[in-house]
Length: 423
Image (cartoon, rainbow, N blue to C red):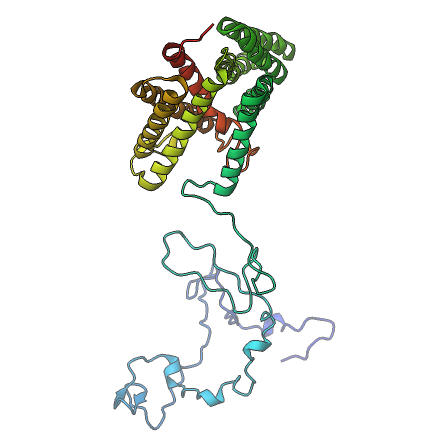
């Protein structure tokens, strides 16, 4: 063999090369083993070391590793079966000191509750750790008592606030009614104005924008015309209110004109026109204040009797899709309370036979319940619970006027027949 040329590669010269191809140190995937090349020669197989016989331990059998405890070879002839088991005291982490629970870096944090559980899971939520109170509540002690919660009745009202506001509204109506009758006209006009504002504010949730200024002006005008000029002027006031809102709305363009005028007409009929019958009752010469009194007392008795009977005996819903809390038992309580109270009151004040007084009370009660259902239907359609939050325990003023607005036209018609106007 010639010496290596320092100026040439380390590969042997042509006459020193062998005719057989060199063995590849790795498997060539592109070249199929034992297949002839283009030159016709065959690939030489890569020499492989012969398999080493397995090392047998003294306790192994020719069939495999021997299990001395079972008295037979191991069933699993895996490579790991030949290894001796690692003892627990020889584990790599056996010399490490275990970490204490109080030394964990997350120990000062409160564990997060699993609020993502599905509604049907039976697992109870984890209890909060001791020494911590739930957010939003302060700890009560002898020096700092617990925060008093407002008491609510079975109908979901704040009863102390509802009773206090109801008594205040009653005094606001009855005092001017008996001592200064023109003051009652001012109270009625103010109530109608607040009712118009609440209705216009509520219907805006449906996309309608009735003009508020002509509605307020027309509502006060309607009450005044009914007070001073009688029933014919009441209808004239309604006509003027509707025409005024149409003319006012023309300045905002044609977009949504029909929708806004429809909402304005509903408000004009529902609030000032129906409320104008209260002005007709009060304007009756001689006994107008008594006519208003028996009407208001009939409505109050109907509401009170219905609330008491419904809260204690109500089991059959009257109109579940409109007002789920109203029941037929409550309606019966409204009829009985209004009939008994009105029979006694009309007999004492107007010398009307008790059965006619009971009929008057029942008619007023039916009208009051229908008025309540009508407002509930409007609120359901608009998606609101109360017209406003002006009165604590009652919601808005319209939530109190809904029964009266349907009751005063009924009372005006019946009293015109039962107790004709003198003079």
